[in-house]
Length: 255
Ligand SMILES: Nc1ncnc2c1ncn2[C@@H]1O[C@H](COP(=O)(O)OP(=O)(O)O)[C@@H](O)[C@H]1O
Ligand SMILES: [Mg+2]
Image 1: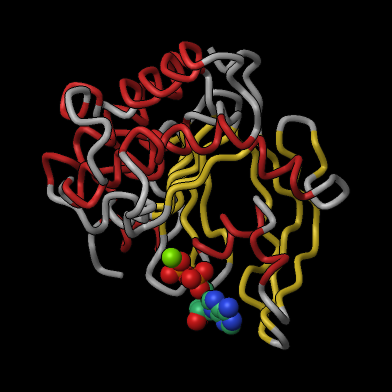
Image 2: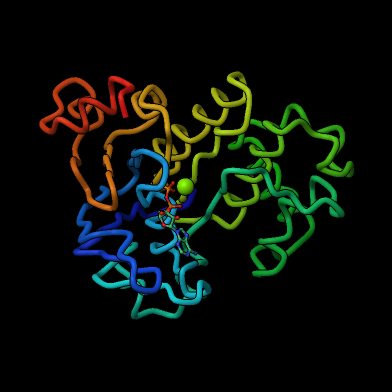
């Protein structure tokens, strides 16, 4: 539905917060329609990497990005930031629904603001599609007017995914989306992520702290340690045949 598949490439990306270099010369390529898992110990720069890709660091005083990031053929730091963010959906670690809007409006707000639907029926179709993709439709279809605060944390996180999907992104950035939810909800979210990539051709970058999740969901994996890309490749290769000692230690749960 999203149409043309599109890839992501990072070339020599470094990020500074003031004098401190957080990301160090990171280069990698994510093929169109695939899922990249970004792994690494806490504080290694995973969230910073996502924020560099969709230019959220523009709003962080003292933050500076060097290198080249290309998303769907668009050089991110040469393009208009609004155009960049329009192509990229993001879901954060903590569910963040708008509490004073209904479940329906939480999903409809993006398409409304961007004029994606020409009629009420079309908007309804987008909302239903996004909620189905996020595997939440069956649980909310009879209470779309309820506030999202009536949903469980895991359902709220799937609502956040539906909200991101409703804008028909070409790239999805997910920052530890299952860190604060129960295993059943986490599995649903994983299934949904997989389907979005495989069936809709959306490229996904998923920050995850569990190697098992990376193995279930991703095609490629990047292991970052203290801001450096230690290893990048097919997820199975990283898990089963890591070439670097640190990657092996991480997969054994020793880091
Ligand atoms: N806005 C900021 N200003 C200064 N330092 C920051 C800021 N955000 C993150 N950091 C620092 O950058 C490093 C990497 O953080 P982060 O990207 O959040 O790591 P991760 O997501 O891998 O846990 C950490 O040492 C963190 O303290
Ligand atoms: Mg983080």
